[in-house]
Image (cartoon, rainbow over all chains, first blue to last red; front, top):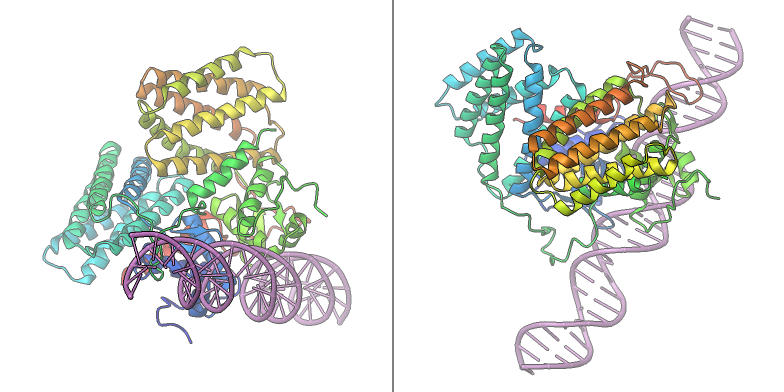
Length: 272
Length: 272
DNA sequence: CGGGTGAGGATTCTGTAGAATCTATTGCTA
DNA sequence: TAGCAATAGATTCTACAGAATCCTCACCCG
């Protein structure tokens, strides 16, 4: 009795079930099937995925580590509430890292792949009147490809993995913001992004690290500007379970800040 | 029958046991009680902490999220093997973020706290001949305080939490490196750090963002240079459980890179 | 008399323990 | 060396204990 909501086949081998559930829940957040503030109940998810609640719990812990949900002790998991401030802050950090990566990638990056990407971008930007889902999908795919190519070519594996994490986080934040505004799939924005991407690629082709970094900075800035418009200014705690009262927030959450707090305590005790 | 190795009291309320275990294991890594490549067996840890293996498993998942251990599907957890390259890469990213944070903190940071910190640093650097553990402890405490103060004053909570994460990661990497070289507690290095810290504080007091950033950059660079000396150049896979063969690495680990891979897959399927 | 308030039990859900199952590895044998 | 049994250990399931929340109802105040 598999729920039709289950995104993809989660019939994985023993030992990879948690990962599979993490991936599935992540894509649920990306696709807007899970919305900000929503309460995730382990038993529901367990029956939905046809497993016991143990691997579900473990997946939720991993998701909390990624920063997509909050884990409140004894009170379960909620999809993270997002404010414009959160998106802005994540993007500031992301901009910093992306600019560094593109600077470092300049000169190392494979020229053939760059040329191919420039070609794709040009043909994409030629289809100005195309507003089909295929167009959006193609643009998104190229977006991912370009950022991945830069990350892979920056000569620093750790930086690459951090960029990946932030890209994911950004998408999660952005897509969770659909809870407030159905402005997704804005064709104009997608077209704008294509031009910004092209500028980055051309700077890389010209071996101009400075300009590449600037282009990347502009690209991310305009992304923030665009997406943060449709998000409320401050996060207002609320649970959409069945319309409860708002008396939450008593204990600290298990989200990154709280994890940091744990680490903090540890470090305090670290110098005996 | 509590094991004497258990770092701190882990008699916590229901629902906070995992966090407590995470903290305890982290400090075990920091203190060198857990060494690179060591195999963590859930049942051993369970009896050591006097709990069932369930919260232990969950703590290991959280630790893998932090990046301190690797989780190999069906084969358990090992303390992450570290190469000089890893440390260098983490530090490059950390330098980037710390410099940005100190730039942003310039002007916002509380002057009183800065002055107090300068005072502590000066008195510390006056004790040139002191090589006692107390001296080391004091220097470390101030190190933490300064970086925390900057993070807290940078006006970007997310950046602050990322810095915290990297600081933790850096310590874990550095301290795991003791597995190779017992060069810990090098007094000369600690004294050098004190001077570097003082330079940062003075630039902040002078409201000179550029110089503060440069001082921070120098500080972290010299840290890398120092610590990466005592670490092997490349990570050579090996398990110190009972002397196994080296045929690992067949499946991907659950460490950040692999997590990114999961996310990657998810994103690939993301644009329907 | 109506609406608000608080106590206390019922319910739902989380967290932990322990049992059962599966996987990987080791050691033995041919 | 290949194949196979034995074992250690990881993963998952089931069951139960504890915490939080919800619901009901009696009581109080306007």
